[in-house]
Figure 1 (cartoon, rainbow over the protein chains, first blue to last red):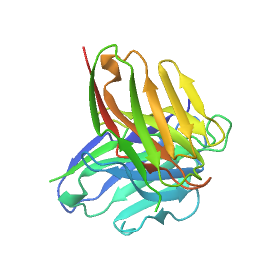
Figure 2 (cartoon, rainbow over the protein chains, first blue to last red):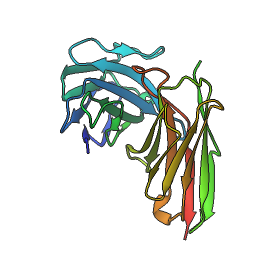
Figure 3 (tube, rainbow over the protein chains, first blue to last red):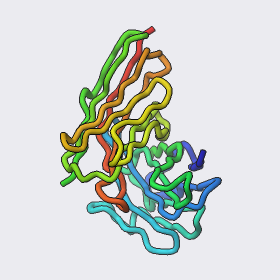
Length: 118
Length: 112
């Protein structure tokens, strides 16, 4: 089955630093990638949608200058949390969908990144 | 606003019991509906995907049904096992090219 690899799985950083999270589709071309955030005991909340080669579309309330998304290729998207603060501590998950028969309409998720900002 | 609701929020059952998880959605014009499993601190695993034209999908001990007219889906787990303990999320895109709207999940504990 299709695999999405997300790294790192856990990161602890000091307030004010920037953190980059990578999301890779290993065996399919991810035409669209989504970034979600999940606070404890809450559902996943969509942050942004990115299509390869174009600017990401951010959900209302998500600061695009704080959460930089780059989807430069069909297999890689990155989320950079700039100048992270403790309130950014959360579980971040990426997902990807492709256009092939095995991936069409299905979302495949990364394993998530637990970000803790001290 | 499209919403997905899951009831109950938490469920604890003894091993071997059959159980049903419920999911309701506000807009019957969903494109498809997907059930996921999430283990603590982990990403999501897709369990079943039901197209809007389908009524149910089965995979092993899992059976998911979809009733668009009533805005409901159920996930049936037969002969539950401790390894089934996880949070189960349902989600649906409300058109073909929109991201999923997630429910808050049902946290299942299967006790040996």
